[in-house]
Length: 257
Image (cartoon, rainbow, N blue to C red):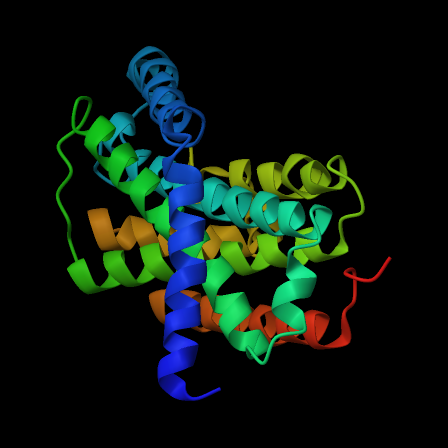
């Protein structure tokens, strides 16, 4: 299979993944918008009015980057984990695996669908935030880079979860018991400088903390961690998860009955 044929195959998979969530936008795009709005009303307006400024920003403004990135993370992950598991369940993955299509094209195709959904939902979350806060981008390059890299990372994580999943229940375990706690403890709603020193040290183990703080820097210009370190950690996770996902495909791990 030559390069042009591979690009046609990649475009086909990516288009299928895009249309998959766009067709059911009431289930995939509308709920995040409502959820983000509720977060702003409850945490920003009601609770935030009782909280002092953080790093010179009103609490409402401070939580905007975290809420946007939270939407990107959950939707990038959810799209790929559900899509790839459905492909496994209906045995359509086998048709792609027995074709001359490289495994990397299959992986990138599914991941691109997750990135597309994460990007669209992130834009929607940003538009919703404009009703509650004035969003000013401090550094466009950092903001855009973290936005896309985070989406890629969690799309890959969703792919790996789907590969190992044996039932529909299995694709909810990681989001419920791992992803959600890491997000809520990742500095979305607070600065780690507000925590006791021991909890600040423990928080540094959470990779989502680095993504949220780097995005904070991109939008607000403030961060609790070094931005270079954040980029290194995010890129490191992407590389590891990418090659691990490729290995799962090449070995058929989680795909064979």
